[in-house]
Image (cartoon, rainbow, N blue to C red):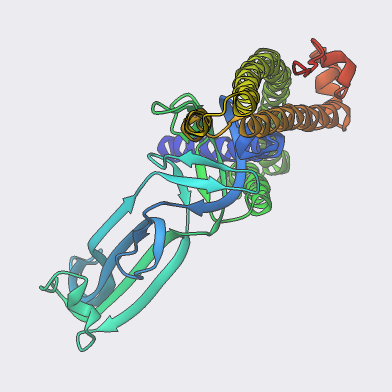
Length: 434
């Protein structure tokens, strides 16, 4: 009896833990705004785009181009089992039953570094240790007369085989829409971000399913596991006192057990909501810091680019003035000097100088400066949009019932949305030299 009681307590605990964990995961996905690839900052990010690769993989079974795949081959078996049992009188009885099932006879997987592409750029993804939610791209059952039976699986059969094999493969196909949540960091080979596994990150997921489907699945798990956790000790209490003549015990014990479990569930929800609000508050601070980083980048980068363009412009102006003076001198010499050969010689030297002078680059630098200014302003705008998305989610959490009561007790207040004047550090005037 004690063993059954301990088992019920443990199962109830794990059901409650699973319920709260499912809701915690759902809230984390809801609280993360979707970032663009060009504005990926160091930290936990959410991205949506398509899976791309320079050298895609080819699926082992499906032979489709992909960036990740996993396959397995299962073989069906069936056997007859004879059991001998003894009844209470000591007489033996023989019982025959048939068992069947599937055993994995071969499996494998392959992955590579790939890129997530959206409408603004790409970011590299390292799928090592990621939680993969992939698409079923191959599912076929065949018998021994099929060429697939032995070509993609072992040549020998398992014991009690029925001569039937199931081939399945999961994959993330090339150009397929994907949804990624993970920790970003700076790449080792260049100044750019990549999404990779981090043991301290709460989640690293690569999914071919939509964000909405993950939200729905988390909410469904929260309610189903929580209700099961409340019902299990309640039903166990009803069974334990079903032969009791005391009606108070028959009603009170199951009701008490159910209420206690419900109380623990509620405390777990409060703990999860409070931690979620604190994490969201800290993410607001991170979003503010990201805006400051981008504005500091603009403040440092643009004047340096302007200086380079001005220097090249002045250099080319000097070259052009020198060429003009030489051309003018050539004309004067042609009038004053009757020696045609000398005039041609000066003209030849002038043409040689012009032909040897490389193509002017200032126009290209002007275009590059324009692109850098546009890209910098775009990065700042994306950082501000990310900040506003975080603030909107945070304010909704702080104002919606019943979370507003927890936020009030914790001293959390709604934060203002982005105001451009609050973030301007210095005016960047781009004035090139005359």
